[in-house]
Length: 103
Image (cartoon, rainbow, N blue to C red; front, side, top):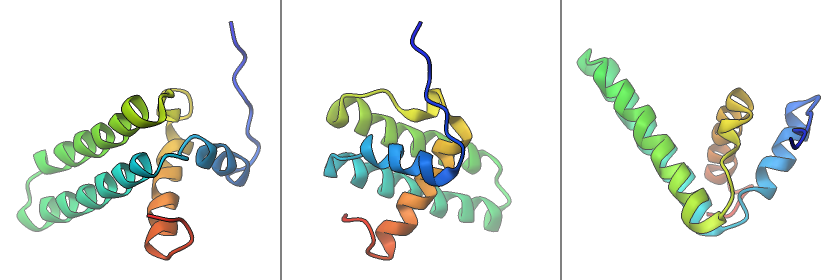
């Protein structure tokens, strides 16, 4: 059995996260998936439709996982580090919107 890496801080994890997201198309799928998720979440709040929240999560992860399976050819960190990966998705989204990461 392969031992998983241990991360003591989110900064350590985010360095690993970025290494797992080198492919530009994969990063774009992550950013677009997160953006659509935000829009669907806001629509859920405005309309009072909880199903849209579920759809937002499903499509957000589907977009990201497609990036890993078809472009990165690696396993999404979500499976091993669900909370850190979720935080990494948001950080990548923000860093892309603010120009710190290329789109």
